[in-house]
Length: 205
Image: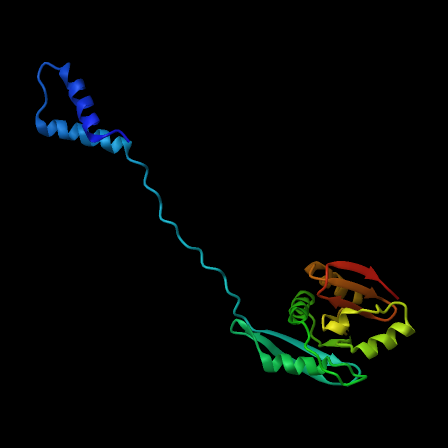
């Protein structure tokens, strides 16, 4: 920025060509105008954007085909997961062969909640398989080549599901649209596998 004294000299030089010089008040006006011309533009204040916080409760309805247990639970509300509801869901999804209960990955419940909304189902998710103990998974793997020896069911990260009022291919499509994990399609066995591993797709029998 040009110094005030320099601006004052420039102002006087410009006035020297006139027959009659302006008053001191006029000189101040000229200097003020020159200073104003050199001033940086006004900067608009930065307005902080508040993040959108999801507050609507999340719920899921399950029916375990092996134990005939049914549970509808609000597992997320007021910005956090509900421990008692998660414990109840974990129990319904236990290994029915051994009775072992393990914590299921909460992202699975989020997937089911979104699939429920996408398909507009009116029924509970039918659970073919939730958590599997190492012993149960070994047994199933020995019986069928379609069961992975190190299945994500063993980590509480997978479920095999279907819906009574939604066509199986539409259930698969809804799960694939989420792009959150693996989706296996088993049309002969009439279920869809969903997990929270890497996004991938496959078809079995």
